[in-house]
Length: 247
Ligand SMILES: [Zn+2]
Image (cartoon, rainbow, N blue to C red; front, top):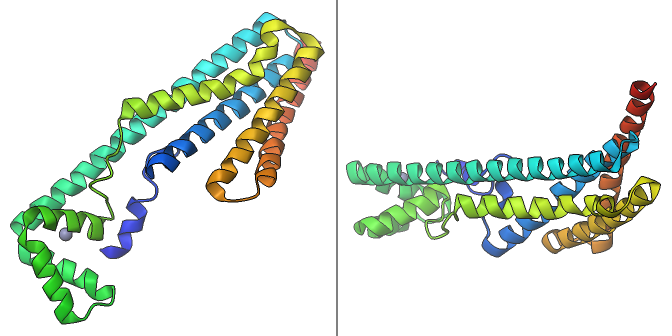
């Protein structure tokens, strides 16, 4: 069925899926989102912990744990997602090859129908499908593209590489809000962390405009607002918990 194909192609994985397809722009996108995830999640975590008034060491331990936990979780999600995507891909190609081998006429008719729907005349659609079905490799390639919406040349990338990239990108983002607490503490460290993270958030947001084609200032401001909102909420929760627990 032709109507199905778009569901298979553009979204290979559930959450972390955006990364792989699309070669270079896919890698850029993965990097930007990885950094962004790390930033927002660890900024929120660190601000929540810091607001509760604990010692610097506890903030640092929480920040490092948050960095590692998030990075491992991202890497695991990415690994599974790429693997599953590849297995689905291979299975579909395998099934299609089987069908072409066992029911060549039905498969040819299927192809002709696809070309008819694209606007070719009945005769022409039949001719095209007959010629494409002559060579088994061409037949399979054509079915993969036209029927399944898969690109056999694309290459799905290695799950380990995708997982490692996610791990590194998340860690970079997550490290930013932690930096000031490695050297100082108290309100000063919180303020510096907020400023550093704000700059990083705005930069990541602006970098997203490479993908969206939107105004970089708008994208930067939007990302800054989202990150600030998340950090503010956890900060307030941390403060509230400090009052209740510490009383
Ligand atoms: Zn087919």
